[in-house]
Image 1 (cartoon, rainbow, N blue to C red):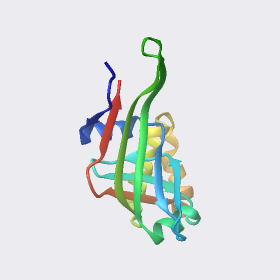
Image 2: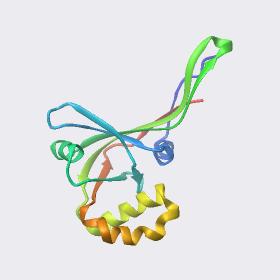
Image 3: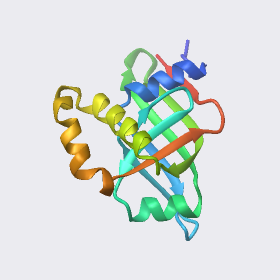
Image 4: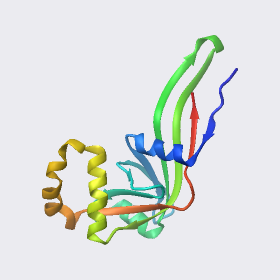
Amino acid sequence: MRKASRQQSAEWALDVFDKAPYVTVSMIRPDGTPYGLPLSVVRKDSTTFYFHCADQGEKIDSLLANPTVSLSAVSKCSPRYEKDKNNFTEYYNSAIAIGTASIVTDDSEKIEALRLICNRFLPSYMEYFEAAIERSLNRTTVIRIILSEPPVGKSKH
């Protein structure tokens, strides 16, 4: 019997985002062409995500032209050959979501977002966080993404 992919709950999909090593954020460039890139994204709650970037460049230009974004993540991926079925397949956990991006202008929210990012990706270096904030807060851009609908997750095991 072939195992089909299964739709999962929004809570399950959020867990995929939490476990994924990076999240692909897709947007539309000002000229209308697609632009997607893997980013270190962190989730604050069931609808709020953050990432940081420089204060100018293609991401900022694209988000200012069209703030709608798509998020996609894979937290597990296992390509397989099933000899007994003579079948190539892939087992996975994945999630997608749609949201609206905006630049965070409030310093306290920026610091909260950067703390979440550092805690997720470099938790053993949090003792250096405050000094890094003092040095670079004013030149770091933080983007907030608010989901406009619940995320969708799928899995195949």
